[in-house]
Length: 103
Image (cartoon, rainbow, N blue to C red; front, side, top):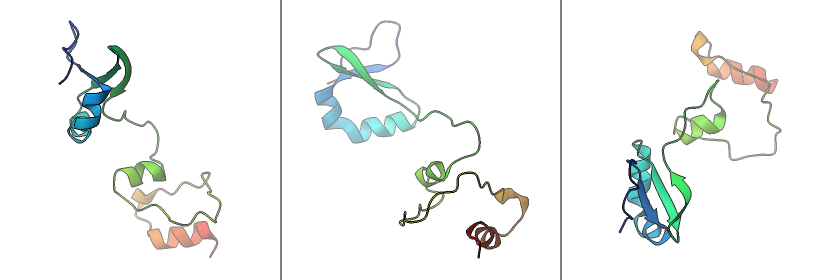
């Protein structure tokens, strides 16, 4: 059972035991924008909430987290973060990848 929300707050406060038993539903609620405060012995220690908007161009991790691409399984090649590919320019992705890879 969740603790009573603090006065003047629309955030739910709940203990760690409740977090463990209700984690799936709480994460879904956080994904919709709700913020949930986790307490230990009545003291706030963590917050569950939506991801903050990222400024700047998205990274490969950002795109993978949103399900827009599948990250590479191999890590034997060094990353080249200095290479930026503007995919909205109408260029073909296969050609851009060949250029980046030096093929």
